[in-house]
Image 1 (cartoon, helix red, strand yellow):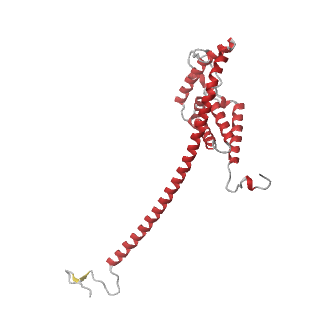
Image 2 (cartoon, rainbow, N blue to C red):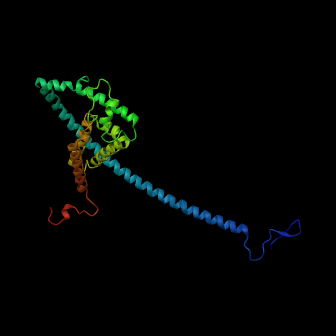
Image 3 (cartoon, rainbow, N blue to C red):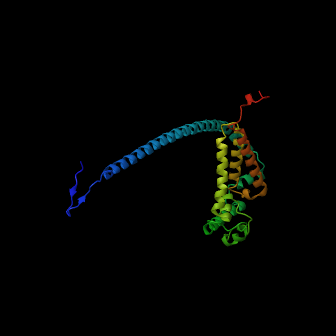
Length: 266
């Protein structure tokens, strides 16, 4: 039996008519449904978390195996390099000892900072740094380094209008800005990453060739703007493209059958 509390004015307050749902029960059912939905959401998140943890562990294990294989390869390479250096150092000393005098003078001059060519490169680098300070984002513009060089040239620089700054990094940053330099560095990093990943696979020879070519051109590019030479640029693009294609073709695809299962193969 429902109790009705009389109000001050003589009416009924909080009364529930027959057939009307109690508001407290409605709120209780609503809270129970919200709690059930929350529990289901938490359970789904827990399942997702377990799946992510499992995937991360699997990926970490695979990456760990790849890194271990790469470490073994690098250790073998270092061992071969040490053996090679054992014979290389005496051979180099012997060759240097019996070099003709003009070639020996040329070799020694590479270490002389006051030599005209070396000193000129130092002054070019300094002028390029000043250009970068003034135009760090977009650079001075394509083919404008030569015309702008006189504004940044030191008074004792050997050449007044060099064609470029004899350094890939400084030239690209000064001429094309930070975006141009970032593109160049991204190209080198992505290609080297591709080669490192293929180091322990069937395309190991191509990976080694790619690393050797890239490192050689990048190191030479610290003393010469070889990335701006048409011959070197197109040769590098062709070589890197051929190496990437060779690495990709050596990887077995999801629908690639083993060679022993292909008719006509052994």
